[in-house]
Amino acid sequence: MTSSPKYKRILLKLSGEALLGKNQFGIDNDTLAFFAKQIHELWQMGVQIAVVVGGGNIFRGIQGASQGMGRAHSDYMGMLATVINGMALQDALEQLDADVRLQSAIPMDRICEPYIRRRAIRHLERGRIVIFGAGTGNPFFTTDTAASLRAVEIEADVVLKGTRVDGVYTADPEKDASATKFDTISFADVLRDQLRVMDMTAFTLCQENKLPIVIFNINQPEALKRIVMGELVGTLVS
Image 1 (cartoon, one colour):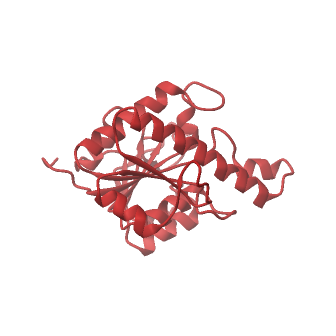
Image 2 (cartoon, one colour; image 1 turned 180 degrees about the vertical axis):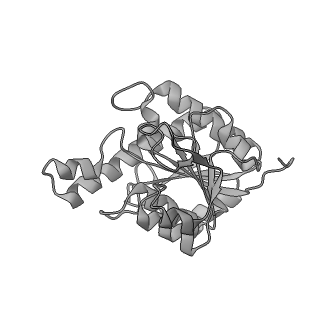
């Protein structure tokens, strides 16, 4: 591990489900504060941080569609849920005195800025944390795809995908006790073995732009800091 951060500009992807904590629905304040503290620590180190948060703790577009709702309509509802989560994370970080901007792919001038690539980069260069809400602003795309797209647009060094699993395994470790974990793996091997990392659109965006992905357990204390400092935590896909 180096004495200075390995990654200077990161895109952190958090699932909405991660904010549930022990709840069945909504946002667990203790969990939110835990994530905010980890992000704040990186911010104090001078790391440029962008964040994409999912909305599954409030509403999942694909789930609404499976229950008979129109997919596009359902996806837009899911996008609004991501803005709610983004507002919550913004508030938690600001309570720690961090400088934060929330940008939305769907204009909502009363509560956040519109997403403008050049403005987002300028915020990062000025030491502000930027949270991207409302996915890509288009239905039929996941927040994983939004994370990959925004990471490419802002020229991030890496996509850090925080999950409840500590990396990529040969099989689902929650279902198969014999599953083994990869410390590193190539994009080609993920595709060949059909391993679940991200949805295919998001994964392909990263592969085509040679943007590494780290899959790690966001609930593990200090994991985020250790990754940014160059320690091998979770699984590196490159």
